[in-house]
Length: 411
Image 1: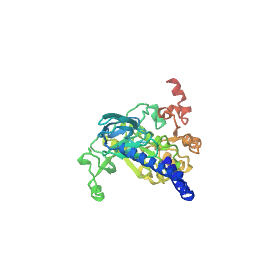
Image 2 (image 1 turned 180 degrees about the vertical axis):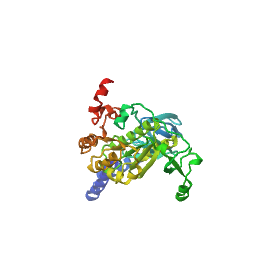
Image 3 (image 1 turned 90 degrees about the vertical axis):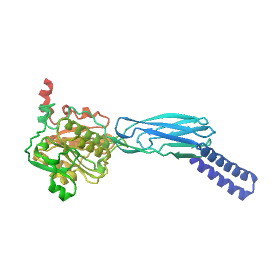
């Protein structure tokens, strides 16, 4: 488009010069440049006439790290050849441009396979496929969209965190699986929303009548060994680029930890204040797992509430048996003070500090790490480019290294 503006400027200058001087050469230049514009526009427009695109895409559910494929069929239904025709699809996926340039003979039909890596979680529209055409002078770039739009939900990536531990007692019982009790006579500890698969006898009719939606009873035994994953989605503490940033790192850690604890038969809950307030009560069902991944796929770190405000507001969700994992890039001292209440509440607590400085932020996490370790809280530090499985290995933490040294040396 910059060349087009230059040509228009030259036409204006030549026309003014011709009017001022009366020299025919300036009028000739005006006519020549206008002719170039007309030829360029007609070339670009005719090159799209008769072009038809159709696409078959693998839509639905996917995961960061996987590849998404789209099969495009490009057909020239015109008796004129198509020269330097650019075809693009999957344009809404972040991190790459998926397209090709080709020449088509009259009535030729070709097949092209687009394959794009999924680099960022979210919900994306696939399509419409577009064809682009330009002229030999580089003045115009016309496009044409073709019907057909699909949608894909990209779940966050997950990493095997086999060596992540919540507390010192867990370290001494590494690899132990905890099973739920399924006794018939149980005391109710909480009320939550109904999920498909919940038994009819679990419905709490009083809460259902009060709220206008199905509510079910959650029993005390189901809440033993439950874990709250607290994710800091405060906008002001995030750092990094479009894809490699503290927000995506925190989401990946949260999803990975949830999978780890669910595989141990521990109910997991998610707590975050981002673009919305997310509060998923600890549960264990496969339906809940899918819902949790869907929430983590769509959540955005655009929240206005700090981690300290989140902990203060959601304090009532924690119980004496709660296990809590806090994931944050924040180094603010206020949330560190809020955590002292959790340690006094005898909750098992771990903190994952995402070092925002390594992602381009201003402040390092070293000071917050020292404060947490002095309070006896097991603390993990994650830096940009470091494998999560290594960063979240309890043998790398400093808080309990003096206590664990004799044990680790004997392994």
